[in-house]
Image 1 (cartoon, rainbow, N blue to C red):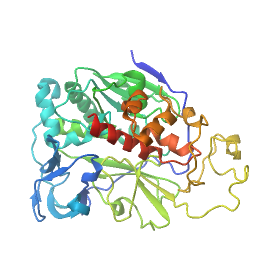
Image 2: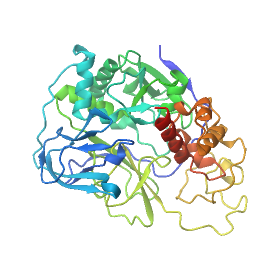
Image 3: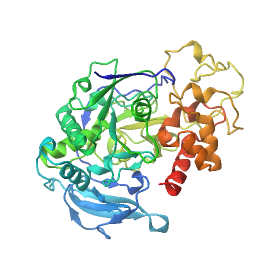
Image 4: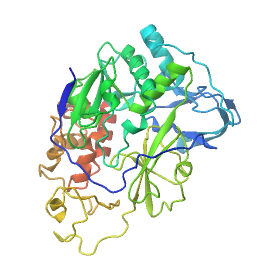
Length: 450
C-alpha cells in the first residue's frame, strides 16, 4: 500500500510565468562547462591539468579529493578548451567544445537486477552518475563507501514556477524505471518515490519502490519533508536523494551503456522571453537556452527555482542540477510610501497588511525587491506557519547563528538543508538570510562532528 502524506503547513505562491508544456529539442551546444562549485564541498583533483585534450562522453575529468570513488566525467565528446580558476587557484569550470559526431565511452549494457550490489555501485560512481546522488544530512555528495538506510526521490515539484517532472520524463519512463531498479541495489532499505496524489501520472505505477502519495502546499514536494515524515534521519545515519531526471540518466546508462546526461530546462518567470521546456545537455550555456538576449542588469536569471536557485549571468552556464531557468525583474525600483498598510494588493503576502489575502487565486508579477531591510529577529510565530516539520525553525536558526552545535543537534539540524528554510526566508519579517544561516550551521556540524 502506498504511504499517504498530507502536508497542511506551507504556502502556495501563485506567480506569473509558468512554463507551458511545449518541448524544444536544442541538441548539443558549441560549448559546455562543468563547474566543480556546483558539487558543494567537493575539492576536485583534475585528470588533465591543461586544455587542448580530447575526451569522449563518459571520460573522467576529475575526482573528489575526499572520496576518490566518485568520478566526474564529461557529458560530451570534444576538446577541453579552458580550465578556469579563481582565487587560490580554485577550479571554477572546465569548458569543452563538443564534436560534431559524439563518441561515447562504453560502460556496457546491463540489467541492474542481474548484477551484484557492488557492481551496480561501481558502475554508477565510476561513470559520473554518482554526482547526481546527494547525502542527508549536510546536503553534500554521497560517499560511495557509505551504505544509506534509504533513498528518496520526489517527483512532486511544489515550488512556485517549478518544472513538471511528469512532462520532462514523459518519454523517459523506461530509463526512469531502470534507474530505480539500480538504486534498489544501493541500499538494504527502501527506495521511496514521492508523487503528487492529485495527478494520474505514470509515476504512480513504478515498480520495486515504496510510493508516497503527497498532497499539500509547498514545501510538500521537498524531499526533506518526505524524509522527515516517512523515515527520519538520526545522527550517524545516511539517506541518499536524487532528482527525477537524474534517475533516468542512470537508467539510460544501464540500458545503453552510455553516459548521456540530457537536461530538460523549464524557462519560467514573468521576465522570461518564452515559457517553454528546452532539452539540451548538462552544462549548456545560458545564451544557448534563452531564445533571445537578456539584459541581466535589469533581469535576474536564476538557475533553479525562484526560492532556492542561484543567480547567474547571461554569459554563464546552467548549473549542473537545475531543471529551471527562472527570470524575474531586478527589484531596483522602490514603491513610494510602500510601508503603508493596504497600499498595494499586487504583492503576495501571508500577512493582512496587503489586500492580496482577499484574492487567493490571483497570480502575481514579482521582482527581487525584499520590501524592507534586515530587522531584529523577534518571536512572531510566522516561521512555524510554513514549516511542516516537527522542529522549531527560529530556535534552530538562532543556534546556527551562535554556533551552538549541541543545540543544533537537539533542534534537528540533521533533518534539514537550506531549501527547507526557503519559505521561512521568504515570509519572515526580519528579512534574514535563513538558507545561508542553515548552510553555515551544517558546515560547522560537518566539520566538527562529521
